[in-house]
Length: 152
Image (cartoon, rainbow, N blue to C red; front, side, top):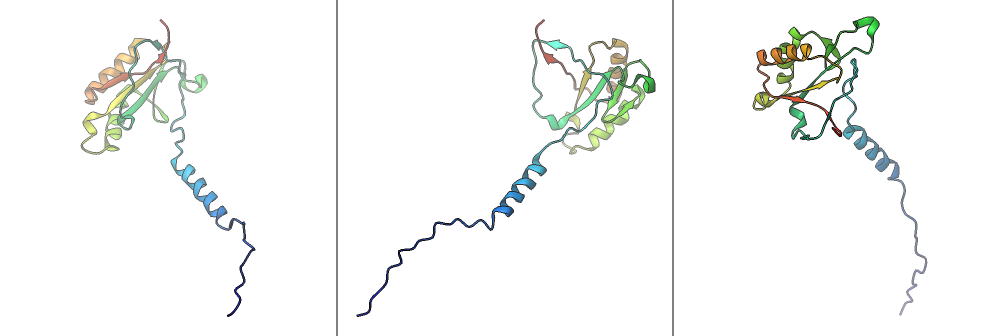
């Protein structure tokens, strides 16, 4: 009979050759899934306080209009302005903005679009009334007024 030798030496090393691949996959995953801020505010924003708030359910159907005094007074003046995405617009340009926002959505969801107005607390109601009138003409009837939770 022959003798069989038992191996008593066992290796406890962990292979690390795939570690850089795993790190880069994680890096790419977080780069793809991270959401960056979409717009830079060109108007001042100090939202009013409210006690009874409701969260919007589907944020993909929400488009924002910011109304307030421009940050760059020397360039835009002191009168309240309307910001849509990254540009300042006039009230007459709101229907075009609404059509562009509806075109970004699926055909089924176009009538469900909500326009969220983020209005500075120091803004007068005249410009807000003009915006509301233009939204009615553009058939954007779901309007939301944004605020922050606070004590009254």
